[in-house]
Length: 247
Length: 247
Image 1 (tube, chains in turn orange, green):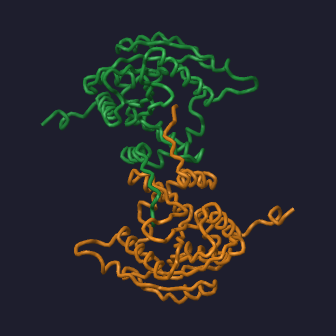
Image 2 (cartoon, rainbow over the protein chains, first blue to last red; image 1 turned 90 degrees about the vertical axis):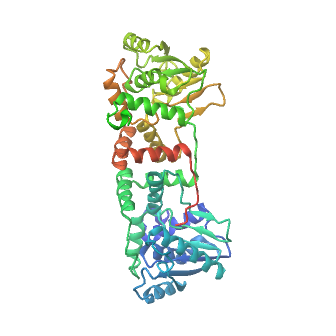
Image 3 (cartoon, one colour; image 1 turned 180 degrees about the horizontal axis):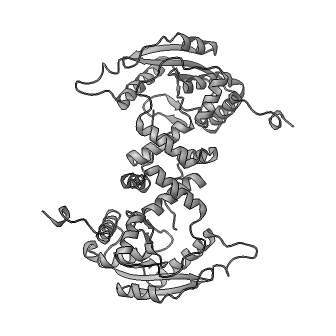
């Protein structure tokens, strides 16, 4: 019998397995890919970077990795030195770019999450194109994705997925979310095991209050049951939108 | 200023208004329709019958109503006299048909909700066709519909709507759910106001335990907020299934 019958897998091994499974299930990485990882300095994108670097042996594809951090005039108080060192130790090149999101606001407009995200998105795509990256990897995990589904349903009245892979029509860039199968608790356990600490300060807005409320509701709703969470993910990811249900 | 600025609408008026709105929004009733109402004897189908009969003045269509109750060998212990009297008092003809759902079980198979519902569905369609009814009206309200969405997502991993109107391809029959905008509490309030009591015993299985658990979760999830419930309904009903969500 193999190791798996006797040895409890470590959080790091579970992370590598679930990332590899997502990569295979959704064809996230192909030979020759040049992947830009969007790193905030937080645990999610750090675990993503570590996993893409360390799971090459199981992903079995030939790909390059580059990481970028977007600093803004909104939140740019920390040294990026530790983040650079950590990424370099995983054989990932690191760049830090600056976007004046507040400076770009039109007169009278207030700073908000939507504005900031559109500005950073644009810069991320530009940076990927300039650096010949054909994929952009984001650190959203399963709990983030479920929160977004339920935010969209309850706040906007829209069934909108947050797919593991999106091929852009406008740009020669594909978006991937290799942590899609990982729950937040698994990401945290892996970060702890790998000694990954938050490397830079994160957004002072933190979690918007509505998202925080949804997070707590989902915990009640799923009872923290991983199988239920994965079924919800599958429902949205596969978009089995059958309209017929007689009774 | 009109009445609505000074007078609180009664539960019966709210029911008539919301049924009329659903009828208009989803084109549930057209001139010349012959509508078969599936009545269990419970509050939902009774309120549905009352509303379709009493809201003719606001629905402003020319339609006929007929009600049918399906008795089974599984649950057929009560007289249908009071149900018939009540429906007749609303100018709705009533028929009671018998389906031996347990008798139709193959050897070794146990009775279950799915089997029973498929048997009753088939009989309902046959009865509608034999009686020249082009519509079948079911008494599902907003809370029933939301429960079904979340049952499908969490148990089956499928995004399946429960539309207010379904045009069957196989049969010249359209299914309608005129109570789709009404919350259960509104149906109960209307039933109480109209003195509608449960007329026959209902299924001894009652609510399946999973559906009961989902009901409680949805209450936590929406905080009982009607606007949130209606946005969830709109999300599934309109099937805005956008796959793109970058951040």
